[in-house]
Length: 330
Image 1: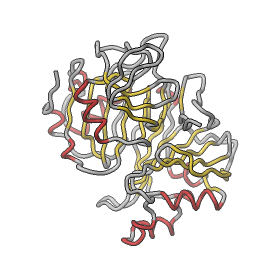
Image 2: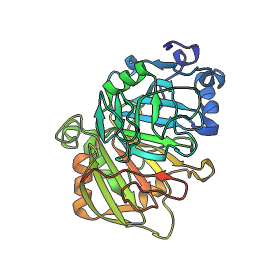
Image 3: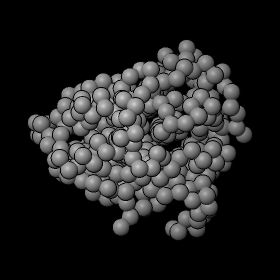
């Protein structure tokens, strides 16, 4: 059963992308934003969800999955438009935490390994992790995928595309707005991007293209992905290279009443190890001219910048099973 108008959600104001507390802090953030009890999210029963696409009819989409809360949050153009119950991986088949992009979509799909149907499949790794319609018993019960209610999965499938970012986390920091563009964007590029001409110049060839930038301190490299394909890579010049960057997500916001800024969040599989991102992280990152040109040619509102101290190998993992970005299939 689904419902669409719970009291807490109808009173919520628009908040910025990635702007909710997940894990242990999610109830507190929702209570602050809506004036309601944090129990509202916990009151959703298995299979229930909310969906309000009219709150943001267009714009970049980002998806956040809370493993501790067994909830999925959908943002479009920085505004929360949907919340759903879900079921993640059961013991022995844990769902990996981290930042992904949607690699492939299929309305009808069958699991090669288990022979089970996976309607509205949105692939996150080539090893089989995906968002899709599935059983929702009210606790982690999947083989590693994120199970969703059928109607919600249908709605979600209609607004995502290859390259849409999906963040799966055990914990993360409160969101922060970082106005400093950092060398990765540059003040001159920021000013030009905010102009009417700049908006066209800095948009990729396809208006729907999704751009992600991955900075790996271990590799000393910057990777530029468009619609989940690596389109450029080059040397990263990182100040104080022995100092961790942390696992962070920055989403570029421009051209609205709030002005231009990065919306930032630190994440980690272990809630205690999530770091708080700030302008200092961005100021430490620069790159070789070729890759920086590729970044500035594709960046637009909704672009995601990810920093990590891990190497950017396929299915990168730490001891805590943290996936940074799955590589496109070769």
